[in-house]
Length: 148
Image (tube, rainbow, N blue to C red; front, top):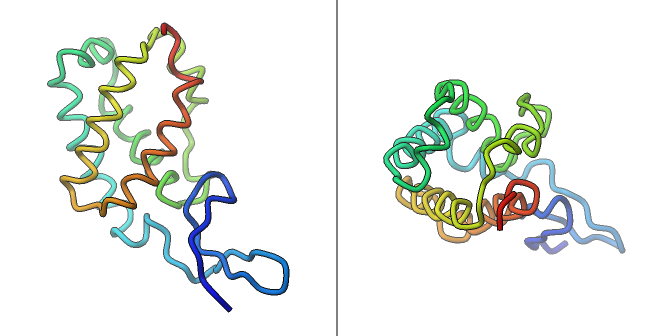
């Protein structure tokens, strides 16, 4: 049987085994979450990312009245899911509802995404893996961006 990368389920790069006529997820295939070391690694990424966000003149104002520690804790869980943990690991509010009041612009989302990608790469995430993670982040744009 041949192992290939696929985006079939949830736009995530999972390893599939193409048997007869059906694709099966290999339960033994490591996720990006596993590959990079789990929660300790994701915690490092998110901590560094929010350090950058809070120093960004274009993004810091979104967090002036926020509990940054709580946001970081939710983001650790969210990025863990993006990297392959089961969706039940994220216990935060619906992302659209949680961000609606912020009036996020396309430009702010771009800056946020650029900082995220820079952080991923600076923390040792391989290029292709960073692209897979960023594709999931980008998929959220339509629901989070309010002002075009």
